[in-house]
Image (cartoon, rainbow, N blue to C red; front, side, top):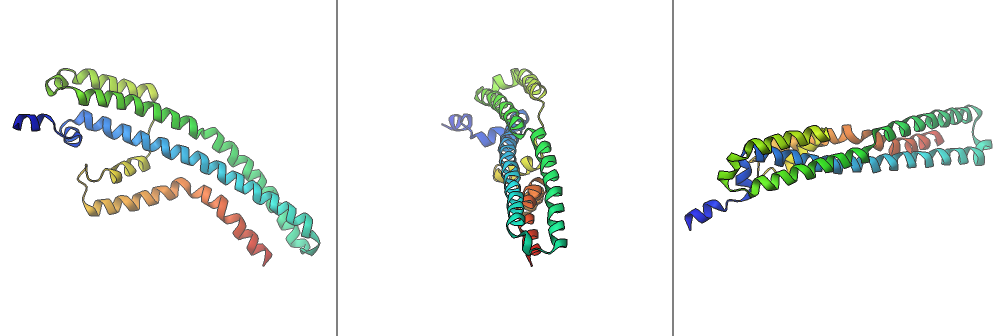
Length: 209
């Protein structure tokens, strides 16, 4: 009974005991996180540019409908602002399209699935077979990384650590520091989209005052 309990160790214990298994677990988890982050960034980019287009249309309609009630100086300012923002919208749309977030997300997902397959095979092997085939799995793991050639971000790694804090035995002060790190990295990741959505209406309301 004792030997049976030892042989049926939980997955987390196996990850801790085997560095290669732990490395695969960490990499595939970060890449799955990266896939979600990139897809979210794609749709936020679409939302932000679409909302900014609506703001520009609303500004043009306002100028046509209420142009007579606007001071000449303010009317010129509104016209120049619409032109500048329109050019900026074209630039940011082209830039975001070139980043191809959905394509990068698919590559991350494919890499994570391949590593997950290696991880599951290695984890299912008896301990004596693990040592015999360790070099083979390490080579396949390296080949998978080279084939897909994707790199997850610090935000993906921080999110991996905070969501697996129990398995990683992270202290509560470190978990709190991770939380602040995730917030800071999230601001860096998404500040542009929040700016495109929030700033134009605030500027327009200030213009009307």
